[in-house]
Image 1: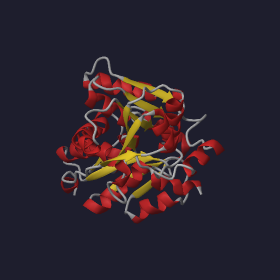
Image 2: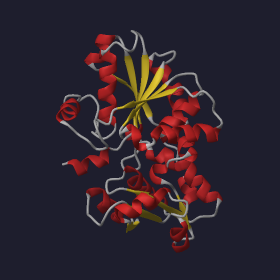
Image 3: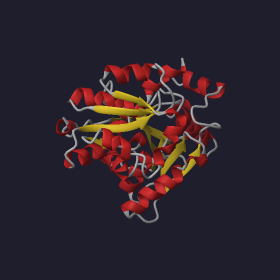
Image 4: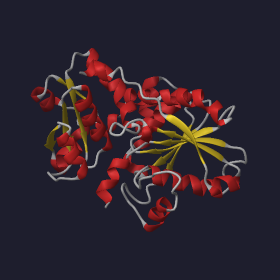
Length: 302
């Protein structure tokens, strides 16, 4: 059940990334391979779930109810975890019933699905949103969309330790910052908390700036009590979430050294290339690129 899930602590590997544009600029990048921690429960999603699952266990819950879209990496990881560790899961989905590869997986993993429509899903931030669902599923613990909030961020803080433990194996005595894609800002917030001002965290927005990511990060910082957090948010959405154009597609196809997807990691690495080629990082800079996973979601783009 939930307790057995809390005993699983995957260790992501740190690997050097060799690309011509990095070598030409004298910038070194190592990739924290969250995408390779597991074949199904991969990416940043497990880490964002971990502290939520702990809270559920402490509260005596038997399983989890959460939200997402028809291609949700979060629901996919949650459903796979439920099947593997033996706890029930319920997914509240945006929109109307459809069978995407992700939805078919959710069903195969044993997740119970409820479709909220679009208007119903927009109400997920209302104060009373969870009331009827908790009445229907009193034994389940609600987790917000994407595993967000302070508990989600706390689960991502361990990445700093993973990098610190492995960086000497790359011949690095130190590194100068982090680079990652942001959907809700939760993963970035976890790294900002872990670094506590020592190194900057650069977050590439996969959603437009008006989607509230900055407010989410600031809320987590305030709740955690961290003053003067060191981070920046950069708009890499290319005009909207899931907006894919020919330039992005070409970049991903020609970057064979690392497997990317176009919603998060592809946009993040493409913007890093633009920053590096613009000379915004000094020669000798060493950065950690967090591969946040999400590769299963590519199936909806074909």
